[in-house]
Length: 102
View 1: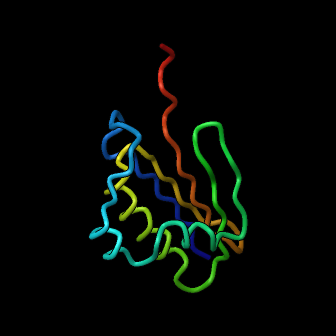
View 2 (view 1 turned 180 degrees about the vertical axis):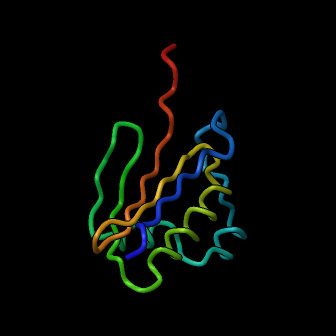
């Protein structure tokens, strides 16, 4: 049996303003709308600095999550992503480093 996959993707621009840069043209080019993709998760868990989504480990799920991460990195460069396999599921964690206190 092979080792479960795990990929950590650091923020493209960790200090970027937390504003989505997705415009109408980029939205049309995405493989899946972000809201629809995340709504397809079997569960969601809120974290203090983000969220974690679990998807059924069906054929193509790893690739769908990888595509989402690649697309989301372009419009929200302040997020970090981590995806990994667990028995029967693919987990996606999306986080943002908490802002320093004022």
